Length: 111
Image (cartoon, rainbow, N blue to C red):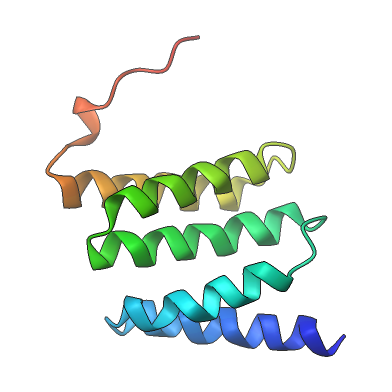
């Protein structure tokens, strides 16, 4: 139980750091939280991965942001969480803006 509380505190602190404009300081907190978090909780893990991806995007490490976001998408695939899907879209848009791409430049997924 202690680790879960520590992980939640690290995640909240990291989210604050990202919002306050110091995303590089958030990375070790999120990495530590994710390393010890029970991956059976796919929704939470995917959400935390989206925060890590956003932190990477804000620091300009777009490759790490994309890779982390891919892991979040894979993690949440079975959860069906609308919140995670919204977060993924928001981070994809941030990555696209940061890289100079616009949503209309993105290929349309095959159906």
